[in-house]
Picture (cartoon, rainbow, N blue to C red):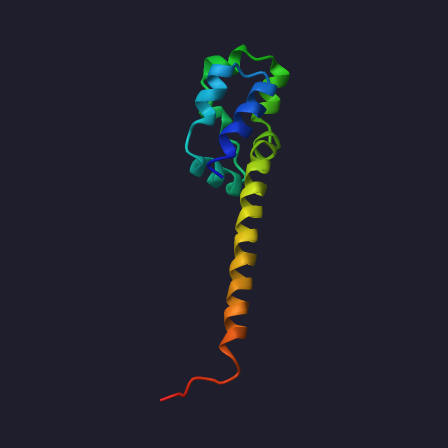
Length: 112
């Protein structure tokens, strides 16, 4: 997630009208806070973006950025990419475990 979230946040913020410098600053923050905020259903863009930056945006952009769907849609691609990676790794490890179990044979180890 740390690889994909900064680019997704930067692109989403710039597309919403946030100046590139402010978007870059916000997108370089650690992803932990963004992840917890998403799990809690909280959009913390009002705390991440400086007030002067928000105030210079049109009212419609402010409402969009601070709304309920912007943040979750902003981080969704990075979260989904991370989940896909985790599931692929889990599937590969399960396959390796299944092959190792099959190669062990039917004879069980004696119990003492």
